[in-house]
Length: 489
Image (tube, rainbow, N blue to C red; front, top):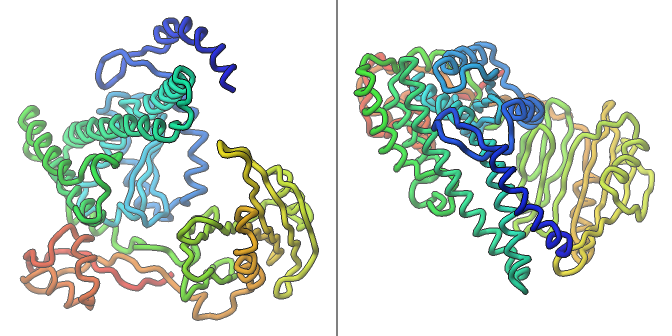
């Protein structure tokens, strides 16, 4: 490999001037020329091709009212942005994670989790402007450029310095640290654009500043937060101060102080929004994973961590020496699923047998995959079960290195062989919690008001964060607040 790169380096140096000239374009936000490796049409194509993957991963949140709201406000804001002709799309996805993100080309996503934590339209508008800002400033294209150039730079160092290969990992981490700064710079610029855009369509951007206090509390405050130098985002409290200053400056510049907040209107709109994990997507209880819609269950290894998404379930011990992946095979027959599983991952089949799992036909296989590493080669051994149940083919992978495989083989088998039909009505008829908008009965503290609606002491702080307030804050009779309640279908 090194010989190839040595031969290519002079070519890159000779071509770099032409490359820089041909890819330098004017950034629509800064007005300055910047090196890009992605045209606008390529940005749009990337967003369009990635959108189905995002929806498959998170799912679309089923609330036409909320979907119409985000699209209406998004399109209104696009018109006052630096790229008004870009075909933006705005969607609420079905995730309880408090997040919003954007893809190149104008694809913007808000989770139902963040929608539940906003307390007025102005907070939402500020974050909406922030995400639109990532697109208008072409941060996705710039990040791709940075990743490509950092890779070139690392290759150059490894070739130029004899023996430097042993430092590849630290060098790579150092390069990532430089990219983190670029990312933080992008976040700061998008905060500025969020203030500008939300102010232009008539919202008070100071509310956006206030939402960073909520983000800080959700991240665990100073004690639980990732250190600044390792975070891709600026410190939430630093952003609270800076965005407040930016909002003041923007209002003075535009001489516009009659700006909307729309607290009650927003709260009434999200009344009933799903809060936290939705059991219909699968849930865990007492070391068992249940899926009440597809009606199956299987045990989770003790002390293993689990991550669930619409695409797959991933389980692993804390030391990361093994993993179980569970997903749905697209094939129609067991044999086809088994054959495709081996071929698509270029696995070496060691053993295969037909069997039944709690009455369901299945194929069990053991396979291996050998990969080369800097330390030599490493063989991964994989136990695979394809199980046919209710017209679907479900697939388990149990993976560990060949050296560790026997340690985990019985753990894999215990999970796979205990896949079974879910019939218990108590585990099927499980519904998510939802945000319910309540009217405060009498003036007092937020904590008192929450208790009057049945909120337990251990959930008071959670509710205070959800309401963007402190427990000791005063609420008045007639004021609207959020209360989390057990929902229904």
